[in-house]
Length: 626
Image 1: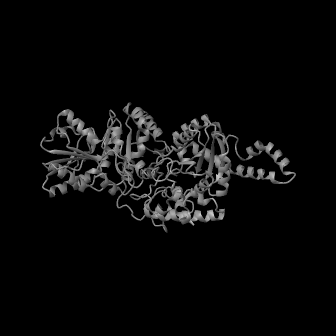
Image 2: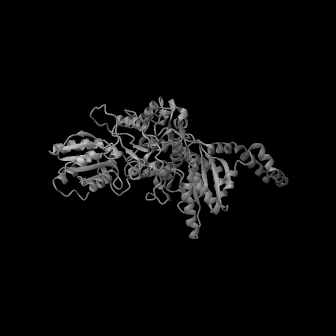
Image 3: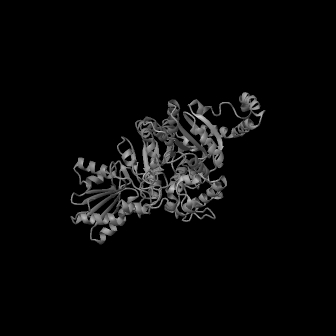
C-alpha cells in the first residue's frame, strides 16, 4: 500500500481500516531505514497517525505545516512523494533528516532547533493575510518545545493579534529526555482532563436522540460547569485561553478519526487555536517505547534487539567530561552541572549517577541556562553548562551580557563542535569561535585529546573568569609527548619539529595536521606541527619566535570568518610577525548532511587535500583558487 502513495491526496479515499494498515507499513519502513542509516526514530513512530490525519484534512502544499525541530517529519516526507528516496535518509546526497525547502514544495519552512515553529507559522499566517490569500497554517509543536521561552513570545503575539492559525500540541511527555518544569506538570493536569473530554462527547450525542434528545442536551449543557468541576479544575485550559487561543483536547493521537474531527472543527473557527494531541513516543516498536530517550536520535541498530551495530571503542568526549567533572565535584561542593534537555547527549547522565542533586536540567532553554549559570556564579558556585556547539548559538546575548561583562566563572562545554555529520546544517558547530573570540575576558580552549580535555577541566576550576571548552563528538587519537606539565592557557605544544612549514592546528584538526606533515615529509618538506589548544589567549611568545622564512598555515574545523586563522593572522600582522600564508577552514558556505569524513573531504580539510595544497603553494603553483 505504501508504494502507491505518491501524494497526500492518495490518502483521501482510504477507509480507516486501510489507514491503520498503512500506518503499520510506515512504521516498518521507519524502523528499517533508521536501523540502517541512524536518525530520529522514537519521535517519528509517535506521530504516524497524527501526520496522516493532518494530510487528510489539510491540503498541503497550499496549506502550510511547520514542524517544530523537524526531526519528526519523516512520515511527512514519505507521503509527499519521497518514499522512493527514503532509503537515502541522512546519507550524503540523500534526503535530509529535517524539512528542506529545496527538497520539496511540501517543506514550507526549514527547522532544526526547538521552539521556533509557532513564530514561523505566525509569520506565514500574517504573510497570507497581507496578501489577501486563503490557506491554513499549522504549527506542530512537541510539549518539550514549550519549555523554550520563544514559544511563549509567539503565543502571546498570536493570541493578541487574533491571527488565524492552528497549533497542534504533540504531547508525548518527552522532549529528548523526559520533560521538566512547571509547564510539564500543567500539561499532565490537562491529560487528566481527558475524562471530561470523553464525557462531553457523550453529552453531545444526546442531540441525535429523537424528541427528548435536544431538551435533555440543553439541561445537561446548562450545568456543564458543575459537571466539569467534578472532573477537572476550571482553570486547566485557562492558560491557552488567557493568551487568546481556543483550546481543543486532549485527543488520542493514535486515533485518526478522532483527530480528523478536531482538525476539521479547527479549520472553520476564527482566530488562533491549540489542539492538544496525546501520543506515545516510540509507539509500535517495543524497544523504542521502553527507551524513548535512547531512540530519540540513534545510530544504526539491530532491529531484533535494539542494540547499536557499531559500539564505540572508547568513551565519548561527553562521558569523559562528565566523569572528570564528577571526580572534581568530590572535593569541590561548588560545582554544578547544567544541561538544556540534553543530559544523555552531552554525557551528563554519568555525572547525574554520582551527583543527581547537582545536575540542573532547565529544559529546552539555553538562554535561561546561561543567565541562570551567571546567577549561580555570582552566588559563589562554579557552574558548568554543557550544550551542543550548535545550540550554544541560542544564548549568545546571555553569554556576553550576563556572564562575560561581569567576568563570572562560568564554563561553557561545547559538545559536537565542528562538522556534525548526518544531522546537517542546523547541527554543525562551526560558529563558536567567531562568537567567543571577540568577547573581552573570555578564554577559548580546544583540546586535541581526551587527556587534554581532562587537564583543561582541572585547570578551569581555579579560574575566576568565563571560559569555553569546545570538543567534537569523537576524534582520532593523537600521539603527544608525555609530559607532567599541567595545562596552561596561552601555551601551545610542539608535537613535531620541522624547518620548512609550520602547521598551527586546533582541536580536531591536530590529528589531521600530523597526517598532513607525514605526507609532506615524503615530498621532502620538513614540517612542524603545533597543537594550539588555547585559541584565546594566543601563545604570543611562540608567535613572536616564528622565523620569517618559514611558511605558516592555520587549520581549524570552523568557519574561516571570525575563526582561529583570522585571529592569528590579524595579531601577526599588527605585531609585524610572520603572517600565515593561508588559513584552512570552512569557506563561506553551509555544509550539507552526510558522513563526517566525507564532508571533511568536501571542505578540503582532509590530510591528503591539505598536503597537496601546501605542496603546490610551496612550489609556487596555482592551488586551484583556494
